[in-house]
Amino acid sequence: MLSVTSLRAAYGRIPILHGIDLKVAAGEFVGILGHNGMGKTTLLKTLIGVVRATAGTIDFEGTDITREPPHRRNRLGIGYVPQGRQIFPKLTVLENLQFGLAQHVRSKSEEEETIDNLLTDLPRLKPLLYRPGGVLSGGEQQILALARCLAGKPRLIMLDEPTEGIQPSIINEIVDLLKRLRDKRNLTIVLVEQNLEFIAALAQRIEVIQRGRVTGELKPDQLANPEIVHEFIGMGGISVGR
Image 1: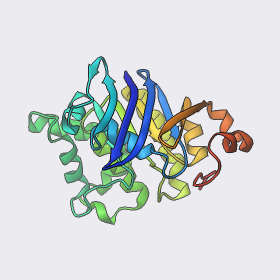
Image 2: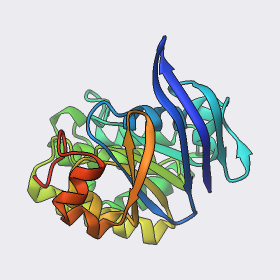
Image 3: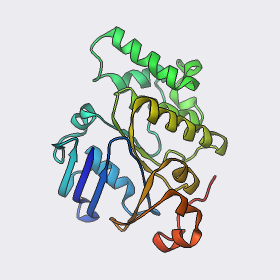
Image 4: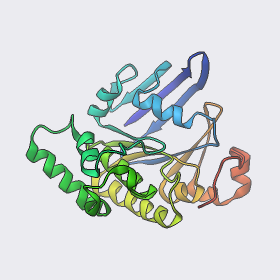
């Protein structure tokens, strides 16, 4: 589904990605692991088009999207849940969802059907529909950010640090939610995360990023071995659990 070859990106004159190679098959759940400053978020931003690639190619379902703008990539079926969630705090939950599906529905009835389906899959949001997004808990905001992404009916979802600022009691709920959504909606998911327990519970394989390069691949059960984790990425900025 996704093929990334020799991908490079920079902020101004500061290079961040130094030739990333990554392949993700349809239906896969792939984790991206590495401590702070290694290029994980930049990789996702480059894949969605917020950061411009300076070299290399991004192929999505047989189409070269390296130079496509973010809205075009979204229409092709790529969704993005950014770090920090970035919901609209003054808009209600319903208005946040309507924003997410604005370029994807053609009628009011289709909008209502899409929102009904989202609330069926994410029932925690149903009693919160008319509350401003800014008053929700961190976990509720994360579920809202995920729902806003799903409103566009993506086939590939990229999640950036979804456990950041989330209470431990909600993390297991999000694990179950992502598993259920992946199976029900036949999603392909790329997850950037530093919580080892969370990423091990979800990812089928984990790509390790160091200094803007993919330097290795781990199986989920290997994250239980601190020696292996230290060998590949060290422990700086990595959370065993919350």
